[in-house]
Image (cartoon, rainbow, N blue to C red; front, side, top):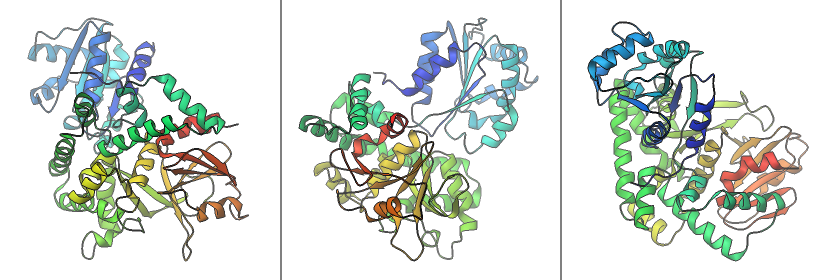
Length: 445
């Protein structure tokens, strides 16, 4: 099976080289490639890899019976499986599916103090149990969040190297439009990525076969797996509520007003009853939440209304898999990304922002048509971002830039299906460049 290069690969290499490294906890939703990347790194860099999966091998939950000290744990692992080898400074211990045994996190302090073995923990619903894990290991671990493929990793999978990425970034920095061939190729690749989403199993199938054959089946199985996770890990009453929220996301994204309305999920539903359900889906890495700002000004943190928000899928492939059959066919055959009134465009840009390390915020002024899709910031400015299906007028964006009411805003960015441009303090970029936004803003003169 081919291995597809991931951004975590470089991170893991740097982590290993750090002389004072702490045990590593890798968070991320199910099936984004955590185990594959970690085990490959282990076998390429250590003489011995001790892999323990608490779901597949629940008897390993007994390894802490004598306490959490390193010596006691490795002794008990060896009792269960004498073939596992512990070589000083040459062994990686992997504790996988940590959500099924969060107590093991208590041992991380002792592994760090002991210093003879490197430890990586991973699991698909760590966010849900994270308070327990955090309190068990505070100060003695490093966190890393892994996502499904972003567009850059997708380009790597298609054979493009770093020089291609740097060339794309240079186009943005110089405001130099892409030529006809570049636009055609990148747009086509980006459409494929939007239809597939970023789940490794889907990408691998597409790379090996060169077609979308089987992609829908894998995506639908992922949705079934997520629903099974809800049944397995969510508390009683919340299971139905969480599933209801999950299934209502595509329906509500299809509306012109994409603000998520709890009242549409179930009769007499109230925010306070569903707040924990939405947090559960976010912590599980299934959704991204975009909060409505109280006013478009800095700072971003704390400047939002937690009762007003939009919900996007953390992977656009899941949104595609939940569309009705006609919309899916329109998307695949006609490559029409306008399905669901631009919801797919917004979902994809929101996903790119999260994967680049941003939080999501939007703004809708009460009793006004003023509305803005997303906001990010650099050192000095608040930057409004518009996601347009066509390169039409962006009235709200212009208002935010030109009005004296918003002094933190000096320019805006618009993502469209067209080429690079600049006019009236608005930078226009193709959708396929959304993944480069953070690099672009840090290079801006």
